[in-house]
Structures are given as structure tokens and as C-alpha cells.
Image (cartoon, rainbow, N blue to C red):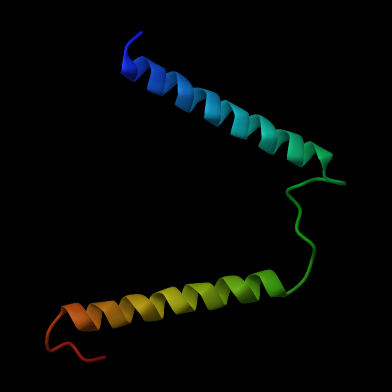
Amino acid sequence: MSIQKKKMAAMAAVLFHLQAAEELHETSLPGSGTQHPSSASPSMWNHSSNQAQMMMRNLIQMRMVPGLKG
């Protein structure tokens, strides 16, 4: 068996194992695993994260383009 085939088989086995573990974890949770508790904190954290990413991108752009001042 070639090395390439061995690598592909190993990757497939790892992915299959991870998928099976994830499905087992989802089924073991009480209720459904896709519902989030109703609170304001997830949207607040998402907004804060998005805002921080935009600020970092803006700083990087100002640094990369000479003469650009925001």
C-alpha cells in the first residue's frame, strides 16, 4: 500500500471518529443540542467580537497603506 493511501485512510478514520464522538455528545445532552438559552449575552459577545475584528483590520490597513489616516 502506498504512503498516500495510508495517509488518506488515517485521515478518514480520524474524521469518522470525531464525527461519531460529536454525534454521541449531541445525543447525550438533555433537550436538543442546537437551542441556546434565551439571554442577551450571546448577541452582545458576537457584536463585541465583530467590532474588535473590524478595528484590528482597520489598524492593519492604516499600517500597510502609507498616507492613509482614518
